[in-house]
Image 1 (cartoon, rainbow, N blue to C red):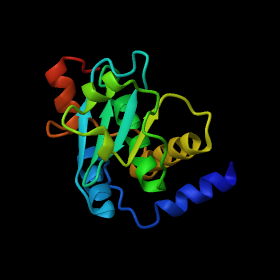
Image 2 (cartoon, rainbow, N blue to C red):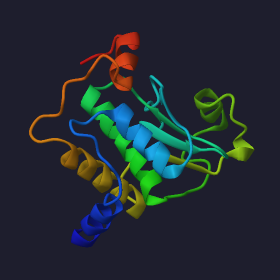
Image 3 (tube, rainbow, N blue to C red):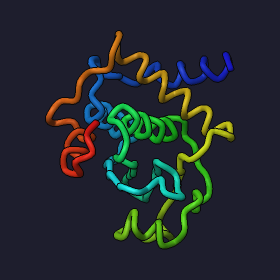
Image 4 (cartoon, rainbow, N blue to C red):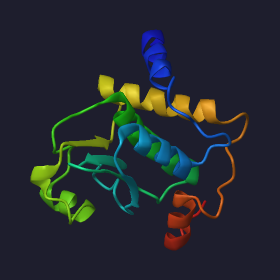
Length: 168
């Protein structure tokens, strides 16, 4: 476990983590680090029989889908977990436990044949999942002293929750 933590800490050496933490700013940092656009997509009901978060890497952009029907802190952690897969260079098969219908529902404009990577967050039984979970926790730990910052009106997750009336 200590080797895993040290490896995750090294991954963050050249990544600026905003203080106080702002998910939109951090997504912009990750986008710049990867040299490609990154967009977040709230997807209510995503976790019903599927992962509560999914990262899709297409030919020119990254897409993170998350279930916003949870607390803001949990939704933010789901997104950080997916961003951690990106920062760690993880890859897996296209399926990530999703049916073709679920994939089409998530990303109807993306041709499945063009998807380079797709990872779904459902369990922590693999080394990649443990690494992503550790890295996500370290990002949050490095970003704040004490309590997490209250959501600001411009925060992506707060806006999505307001639209969906699922604020906690």
